[in-house]
Every structure is written in structure tokens, then in C-alpha cells.
Image (cartoon, rainbow, N blue to C red; front, side, top):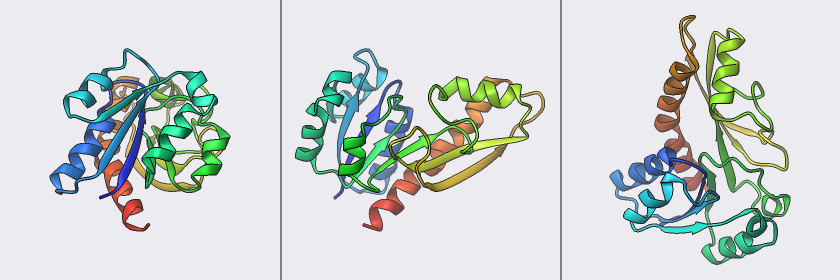
Length: 188
């Protein structure tokens, strides 16, 4: 059994997908879901599954409340699954090569502060990119600059809207994110 800390900010489709993936493999991991938006849809979804949920604000993150919760939980891996805030440098240093993020583009393109979700997909379409994809990377002290672990590509057709790109990217996220997490956990 592995301890997986899942940080999320929104609907939690990646969190659900990760938990489902391991349940289908009969791997009984322990999860804690840490959410920075008190109205995020993931809260209800996680609570229905009986997962521990921690709702926090910037002050909790910056002043060590979350660091304390993580120490108590002793995570094998910290997964940013649709989490939109920059991770504090102290936590990055405390968990070297244990914090990963998924980004909805092929980094280094379309990374950095403010580049998330539909902002990324709109940029991909407006720049007439021929392909996009996902990047799973380790988290460091800068937005989207940690070492790349894995990338998957998908074509962008000339008629695609940002919504079409989002759907294609989500297919990649759901297919590959849990597999990469499993490989990382098994390598520890």
C-alpha cells in the first residue's frame, strides 16, 4: 500500500481517474485529497468515496499547515492533479522527486504562470499548432520547469476549437497519468 497525496482545485476528474485506476488493479492505496477551493466539485466526490479531504487556503500552504499534514501522512508521492497554485519552495525541497504535476501541453511550450486549462488550449489553437499533448513532470520552484518524466502527443486538426483540444488532451491525461504514477511508485 502506498500513500498518495492528491492536490486539486476543480472538478477532480484526474483525481477520480487515479483512484479508479488503482481500485481496478486491487491496489489499496491510502489517499489524502488536498483542495484549495472550498466550492470545488472534487470535495463532494472524494467524500462520497470515503477519502480524507483537507480544504486549505494560501495562508495554510505558506505557513506550514499543509507541510504538517503532509508530514503526518508521509506520502510516497504528491500528485498535483489540476492544482493551480505554485507549490512552496520549502515543500519542493522537503520532497525531492516526490512531487509531480500534469500539464496540458508539450512543455516547454505553453507553460508558466497563468498557463493552465483553457488558456493553454486557446493558445494552441490560436497559434495553429499541429500537435499538442500532456507533460508529466517533477515539480521544482518554478512553474512548469521541473524535469520531464513523460510526454504524450495528439494531433490538432485545423478545424479544432479549444474545447476539441481540451477533450483530446483529457483522453491522454486519463490514459497515461495513472500509469506514470504507478511506475513512479513501483520504482521507489
